[in-house]
Image (cartoon, rainbow, N blue to C red; front, side, top):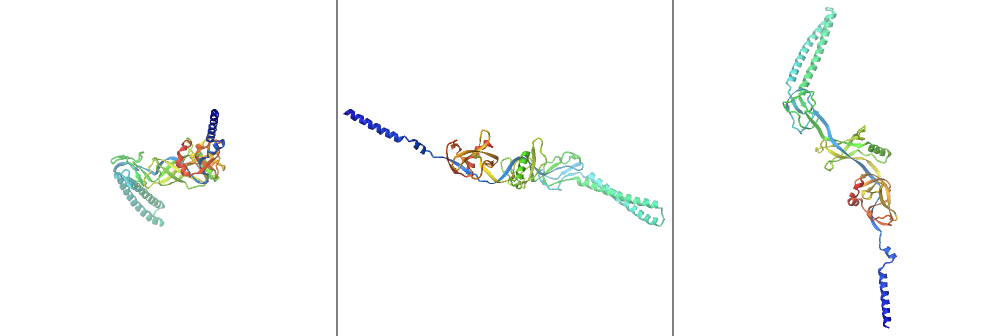
Length: 394
């Protein structure tokens, strides 16, 4: 009897344990109910006008450059400017000893006075002979000689007047004047130095810096591609505005304009020279500075931008993104990307308006892993959160 009661107790305890285990172990159906879809951040593709730019490296150069050289020879007696100062066109810079040129001018003036006196005498004689030959008081030959002498004296006056003008020019050129307005550099001579009219070395150099050139180069292939896009209507033409970034990374506050592009391609580099001009009222830009010029090349009316954080590279090098379908199933898609615009890629093919591109939570997507829960995020939030994730793809 005691054995039977003990066996019954063991059976009851075993049944209770089995029920407890059954309650603790979820069924196969319950296992599936405990997992919710992974949440991913998406942006909705919305075509919009995109201003296309191109960044090129270049150097600055002065808007005008004039090397000051003497036009007469002599000893420099004075330097009439301060090195590094602003000079005006026509301002006196150097004084060359004018003594010999003033003497030549005086001699030329004396010669001119003598020639005029001879001309006056020849004129009187020619007039008198004209009256005498009319009444046959003299021979025609004597009259012809008098008229020829008068013309010769007139020519001598003209020649002597030119000599006076030449001597006066030499006197004026003994004072070296600024050919343009601008900032003058250091002087290569001091008072007492001998200078010559044919010397190769300039006395000083003047540069106009209130406007300044920026010379950059663009590859011929990029130029041809840009012209093709403009001709096909893919891009809308814009005014050729240029922005500058200085060597220390600061942005120059004043915009410039593209002046011209060269008409030949450099055979060694395959590039074309471009020149832009910038206002420089404060003299911040100096000749020879290294800068980066950002040129506005056009406007794409229906451009599609995708954050760089959303783009990855396939093993074959193709750019890919994950697009969430209407059933919230993510699928990888190959796209064509062009240039970068800020923190985004400009997509030329592979996406269309309304597509939902995954920009956050890519690590939660598994091939064949089922639906996800898309959450629309702002593009600015994507840039701040993942802007540095694509440095290897640039």
